[in-house]
Length: 157
Image (cartoon, rainbow, N blue to C red; front, top):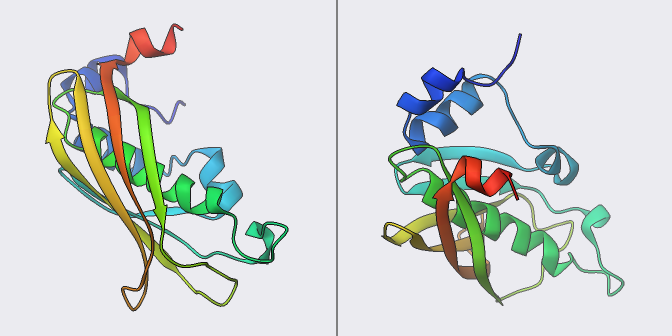
């Protein structure tokens, strides 16, 4: 039995419904398992990813690699856009600008990447995200421009 929605069910869903259905079915991309990330909250135009940086995420300088923060922020930006679409849509990152505010370590604790939609057009979305700890200290922020395209077209190459 497939864990994905049937094509007829999927066609009737908007982006938010599709994300909620994936969560209900326990669908999680392998990258999220690899980095220990979770989708904690989702509403129309807003998502929250969580993760706990550890020494396994360190770069050679002994701090959490910037790619860890960038991955959380890119995920939050992209899924925030997807949650605001009227039909299942591929939200493809065209640009991601990340600003780093403070280094993370294995003692940082759980962080949240809070992504929100700034504007949604027919073909392009603009989103932003902030990466904060449990005390709302900011570690990184990002803005993203995403191409909105038919999912079939995006998957065909």
